[in-house]
Each structure stands twice: as structure tokens, then as C-alpha cells.
Image 1 (cartoon, rainbow, N blue to C red):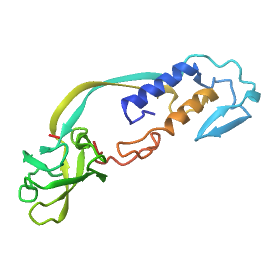
Image 2 (image 1 turned 180 degrees about the horizontal axis):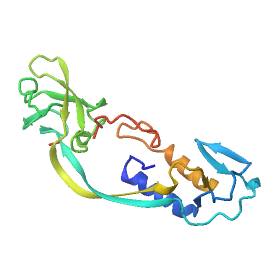
Image 3 (image 1 turned 90 degrees about the vertical axis):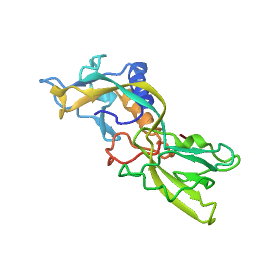
Image 4 (image 1 turned 90 degrees about the horizontal axis):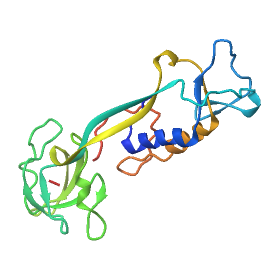
Length: 222
């Protein structure tokens, strides 16, 4: 299935296929399911004792897909001092409804304390955490200069800072083999299992790239 993750991970998966020179192929019509298999992360792998020795060295059941999409870093419409983290200018803060509903909430002189629960401060944070994918949201925690009280807002990243084209590559099972039993060389399963266990999101949390997750706002300065 298509891996819905970063291009680096997808390219790593492609590299893993090439490096290990694996074979993934459909069973032939006159071939019964091998009697000796073991499971790894839900994938059946032929064991050496199965007698299945003539597997092709090409990815018969897979097709390489490629997509070019626009990527980049986007800000939130708020200028913050890189050392003191104080708000210097408010351009256009947008909420989840696309409205500028924070005009009377954020003021020049307020201090940005954290972004997506990442604490900012001398030696403990980089203002670049404000930047992220277009359309994603950032949770800001600020301290009011006037009252000294803390408050939180969720703002949309919409101001283009830097843009580029991303080349995404991944393998998909060919349509004619979807839903069928497939043979897999154990080496490729081990390689993909290692990739699967090493993918993290922007918050540093592990992400299972094979388990579909609800589409949610991801955490990607002016």
C-alpha cells in the first residue's frame, strides 16, 4: 500500500528494496501455499525449508509510483524576536475557520512561551518551530504583557517563507495482484520493519506508517 509519510521515508523504502535485492512475487497458478512460513509484523515470509527456491529477483507484484508535489515552510503571520520571543508585529493570524479572530487577543509585547508544547527560552528553543506545512496548525502559548496571564491559541500556517517541489516515490501492489497471497524474501521484510520502527513525526513521536490514521492537522515565523 502507499506509504503516507515523508518523502525521505519513502525514498528510504525504495533504497531498501534496491539494496537488499529482494523478490516479492505472486504465487503461480500451479503453486500451493508453502507449508512452512512465519509471520513478521503481519507479513508472511517464506522460510528456507519451504522449498521455494526459484523466486524471481524482480518485483513482479509491485509497481513504482512517483508524484511531484509542492512543499515548503510556512509561517503564521506573526513576527517574534528570535532571542526574547516577544511579539514584534502581528500581520494576519488565522484560526481554523479562516478568520482573523485573534486581533483582540494577541498584542505586541506579549511573549511566546511555547509552540506545539515545545518550550521556548534561552538555550531551550528555536523560533523556527513556528514554521511548518501549509495549512497545518500551531498551538501557541503566550504570556500577556499587560496582565501577565498565559493564554493559548491555535493558528493556521499560511504565509509562504520558502517553497520547493518534493519528489515522492513509493511501491504499490499491482492491481491484478491486490488481495492475493504474495511471497516475500525475508530480507526485505526485515528492512521494511526497520524503516517502519524508525519513522517519527514533527513532535518526535513514533508513527506507524502502515496503519492508517485519521487525517488531522499536523504541527509543522512570519
